[in-house]
Image (cartoon, rainbow, N blue to C red; front, top):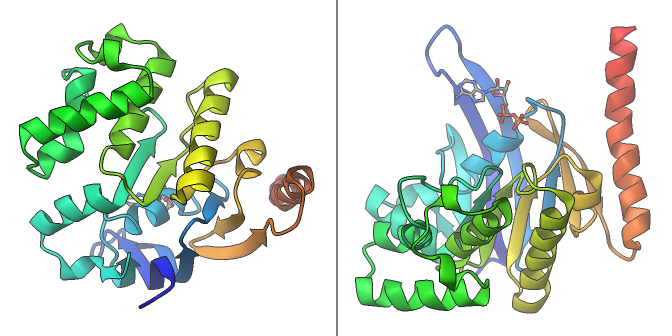
Length: 258
Ligand code: ADP
């Protein structure tokens, strides 16, 4: 039995396969994550971060290579099995929350369970419980447009957590939030990570947010170009290292322009 909650072997993603626009976005990436790690993925725009996160989390399928989530290789499952597997193993938080405007918060939060055909009585219990834990139980019959950004964020977190996933995948989760709501989201993620050993894999371009991680991978041109491990560093020291890593890229861009 492997130690890893996520193991990626020679992951390759080619867009537009066998067309004139064939483009290899990820080149044979090897990557492993242990239970309870908090990983941040950084890198310049267009470097492959979203492609990577989508292909390691069943949202998209790699062109080649292997992706094991909690020991199961994702391509050994049928699409029906993947639906159930996804809600039992993975929770997703996206930049724009991805709540459906035509559905109430209740329906949005229940979505992963509804898709996995969990009984409606069980769904109801679980939605109530998770909404109470995030203090939005009084908003369950409201539509996203009737809620504030912070309330929508809490609903999105409820939806991500409804299946008690052991891995949370977050793509620029604080991208559309003000600093108070960003801090709140980070503290919820940190608490889940530290107290419940939930593994977090998050894309962010913000060095401050990244400094909450335990390991940072820097993706450039479809490969993992560098890795930083926080280890015994204080958060401030780690933050400085992250700034240095990113400033190398800014310097390169400036040099190319001049
Ligand atoms: P990032 O998240 O780092 O900004 P992406 O993963 O979105 O980068 O994109 C990586 C590269 O793959 C970019 O060059 C982008 O144009 C290309 N790409 C992304 N999605 C598609 C797609 N659906 N079809 C073709 N090319 C794509």
